[in-house]
Image (cartoon, rainbow, N blue to C red; front, top):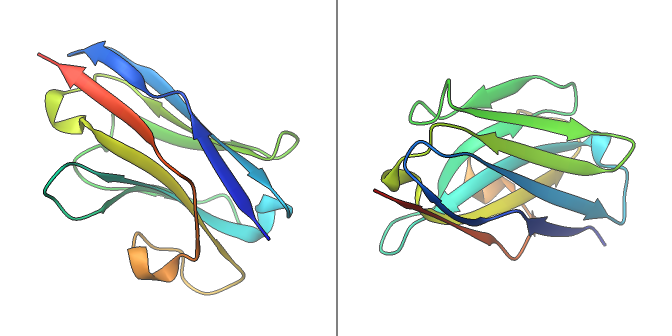
Length: 124
């Protein structure tokens, strides 16, 4: 059973930075498509960034150039470096995992493993 535990959220001012972490336990996560999602109150969950099992990355347009997804295979940990934060980035951030082949994409229904979330709040 794969378990995901996020950390690193907090409150920052506009223009600030945070780094989220997602520790993965129960399997070698290099075999997984890993994604960061976020959900603000009253909105649908939005895919933010992904990294495939081959190491390729992709980002939502709203965060491209500001956020960077990466992974440390030795630590079995996924990261999301968030720079130049804006109030509209305020949300609960979740990491998610999908094992195996197939297309790695920012689609919520593809993912069976989820963390509990970490809150990011950006004030103006």
